[in-house]
Image (tube, rainbow, N blue to C red):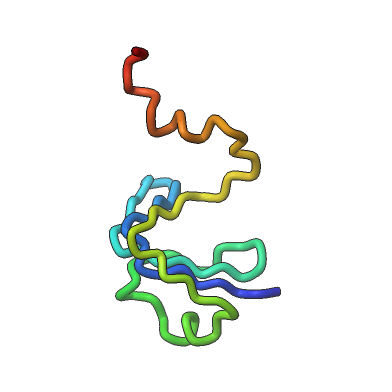
Length: 84
């Protein structure tokens, strides 16, 4: 299984029990599972260095995986805008 490290996300939305939103967040996956999540400053060097791929997510928002976002995903951002 491959591991992916996503770091420096402007905003990382965890959807955990506390609904944390982390600024400058990082996430490490091990295959289909999330192995670690937290602030980039707290990312253990061995997880980053051992990752098969490291993604710099500056200027990005990292959200939990959506399997089928279809074409209505944009409505998440526009649902509070009244119709013209």
